[in-house]
Amino acid sequence: MKGRRGRETPLQLTLTEEQEQELVRYIRNRSMKAGLVRRAKIILSMAQTRSITETARIIGLNRRIVRYWVARFIADGFQGLEDRAGRGRKRTEKK
Image (cartoon, rainbow, N blue to C red; front, side):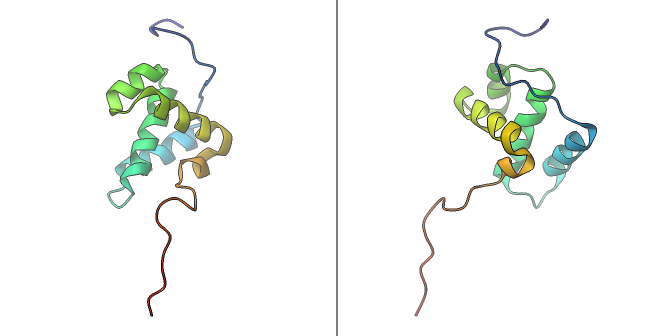
């Protein structure tokens, strides 16, 4: 592909118009969790034919994290961008 530098990635991302609009809504929504906004930016950047390295540099993450979220989006769609259950400290019941 013209314009890309470095190695090609097997993670090819093509969005439908509806998916792109939904990701833009994620980014513009002021009440959206910061993590979801960052993940939406990753997906939009990669869909604009940017490389993993360029996307990581623009967003301020490392390449491994960018690859991780793109792979999850490809596998699970928008559900893949959500935090998975079981992360973080478990709740304790107050007596």
